[in-house]
Length: 81
Image (cartoon, rainbow, N blue to C red):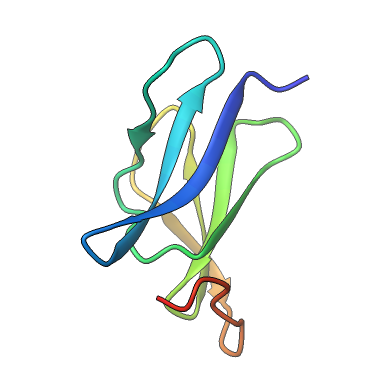
């Protein structure tokens, strides 16, 4: 069973992924995920993949800069940002 929750939230018109441990109340924004419109964990829960701005990217849950996996042109933005 997982111990973290990731979700996309918009503040000030900019969407971003937030990560919250289930044993904590506050969520923290993940740097470099601005413009994300969806996200999912890797099977080992070490990575968070996300789409946005026509790209599929991943970022380590432990921190670091996002890495582009591939172009995702034509992927629909779920939230309309």
